[in-house]
Length: 388
Image 1: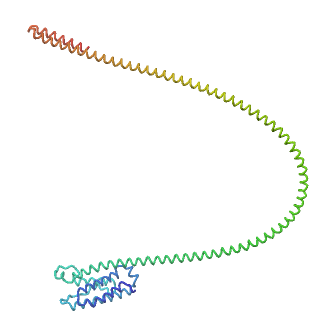
Image 2 (image 1 turned 120 degrees about the horizontal axis):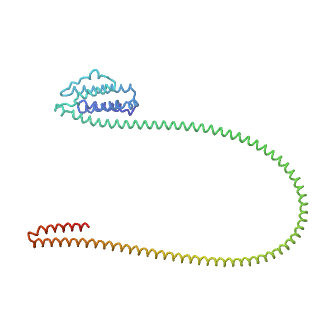
Image 3 (image 1 turned 90 degrees about the vertical axis):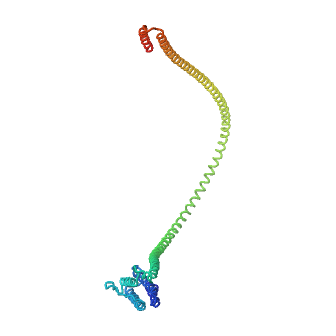
């Protein structure tokens, strides 16, 4: 409870109450301090409930209200122009609660002139200083509220982390205890298994020892019989070795004879293979020569065919070129003939027109009708010729 915001603000209020008796500005600061204490008490319900209980909060509210009213009475008695301070309405007189504190604080702030007024004299009074202090204190209150909230959240997070750590420790302790139990059970099972294995090993060693003794006796008897058989076998082998030696001599003589014959056969085979290889090389060489001659002949024939084809294509190209020249010459000749015919016709018509004009000048008026008729006939004849 040493760091309780409500108690700290109350102590600050006690310190200021003595100095605020003769100074309205100090009284305003006193009210601001009280307001901050009230905000700390009522602004965040969860933080307040985490620090003090309801009964202690009510006691602090009563004490704060009594000091506020004491300061109010002292200032009103010493003011040159005393202001009449009335108690809050009956519906706001909820002494000892947060609502009552705020209602009383709001009422006192209205009494000292914190509301907006039109009177210039009131504007120039200590109210302005109180408003400035009020705004500053409100900002400080907001900052302190934010810091208190952050502090509370940090404490809550620390508490939750501590709880998680304790839970984890308990879980680890439980797991360790269970692991020790399991280890103990495993150790007991291992000891029992070791005892069983030791007993089985002892019985097995005893059985092995007895079997080994029996086996050794059996092996000794078998070795004796084996030794007798070996000696008999060695005698038989010595006899057989002598026989094999004689047979080996005969075989070696035979092999030497066979080697001599094989050498002769090998030399004969080498000579035959050399002759066959020579004949094969000769045949291959002749076949290769025939193949090359055949390929040369085919290449020659192919070249002749290609040249003949090229000559044929050149001949055809020349014929096409001559035909094209003949066609173009014929077209030019026809165009020239048509042009000449047209020019001759135009010249004849011009000559007839000129003759007509000269005749008209030379003829008399009597012959004009006949000449006109002749001209018409000539004109019809000219049109017929042009059409043809």
